[in-house]
Length: 350
Image 1 (cartoon, rainbow, N blue to C red):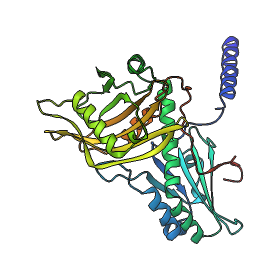
Image 2 (image 1 turned 30 degrees about the horizontal axis):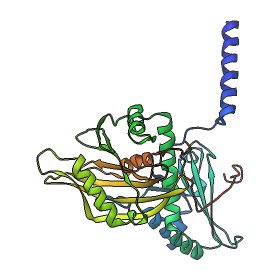
Image 3 (image 1 turned 60 degrees about the vertical axis):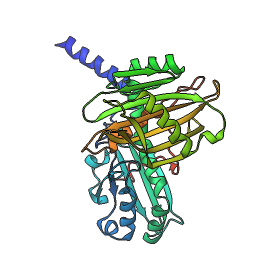
Image 4 (image 1 turned 180 degrees about the vertical axis):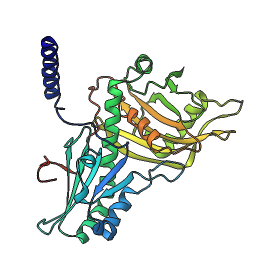
């Protein structure tokens, strides 16, 4: 018995040391599903224009999907009910309206009560300024939490991803890419690679292709659609002759973004199979591989008829950010922007 007690004591010491080393001692795993949001605000404020303004921001539709889906699943609680159970929620917004503040601000803290966790505090001197501020900073608030969720998926991919896809992309393009292990079927073409879950429903797909970089006119909406259609028609034919993947040109949006501190073109839209009833959403990044004078495009698309697509698309979108071009560093976390990071005092925020 004495030896058992000594052994258990030793195990406890080792576990305690490991927890301290990893910074996770007494920090529980966060609750809630991806893209769930808890707003901490008193009921009266929540039902007045200030609260409705914040609700409308979080209730905004996700871009690039064939049907309406809100950006977040929204819950709220009164500050007096913000207890131990609710504190470990993965995404939290604290509404903080006090006349002692001189101006509205966005502040955030990481992993305060749980891991992983993001808590944003929206400060304002009064409800009128709060309403105006959150409306004006709508996209900043949405992007902040979307990027936080994508970073969580990237961290999951870091620990577990398809070795097969990583090897294939490396051998064809000299680049690295992390995708979910479920993408086990693949096809290789000239300067082209496609991996898929090959599922009848909720089918996930990743495409990588490259072409010579000529000039900045490459990164126009029209050129993107032209190039995408020519590559997909050649490499992704349908079940019967005359069928092939095409872009629904009415629903394509492009914008300039930064990935790994370098320029990238993001494109979102819908695809369809010509001559068939298949279709769905896609998102892609087009990036310049300056070392080899080419553009590398990585695209995620899904086929998930009659099902909600937000979480599946955003999970696949995380893979796009893991593309590591030749000579690039391995770090892939997306910087969250628009809010000031601060240390939250757990005692004063009870």
